[in-house]
Length: 207
Image: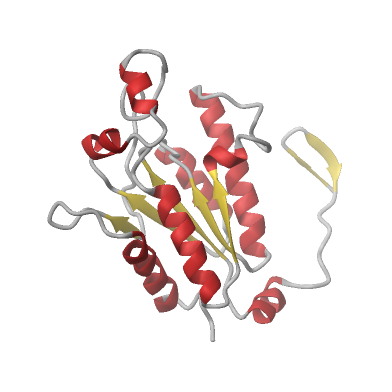
């Protein structure tokens, strides 16, 4: 019996099917691919391309998209610093469950604060947390502005917008960094290929 947070008198129920058994069934190793970067940097593009490429290889993944999760799980949260922290904590817990189930969990969120991302990394006991930094210039992201949010932020209609009047703290030791090459952005296929190559090298795509 234990107490966790505000929950008391609770017990951990062990599953009769273990993580290694689930991974053997799926022929893959569960992990979290955490894609972080500014709005418009290509996070969702990479997440969708990666998920599709894994599917074509017979590997099971699930995309946890930041905006999508705010339609349900996190619809009670705003964009204040404490709400952003809770948003990332909840997504981290869900991503951990998917990884424990043996899936390749792809989390795609701005996740601007380093401490919040590091807290999610610490949730995984076997360090199966792969941080992918979409390191694209602010000018490029603002030029793309697929949702029109930068324009609204510049006009003062959105407050606390990451990259404009709220900071983005880049990773210090991410596993992968996606950059422009000679001023040209990599294609979705090329970006997914970089992540796939890493997953193969580290043994997540077992065969």
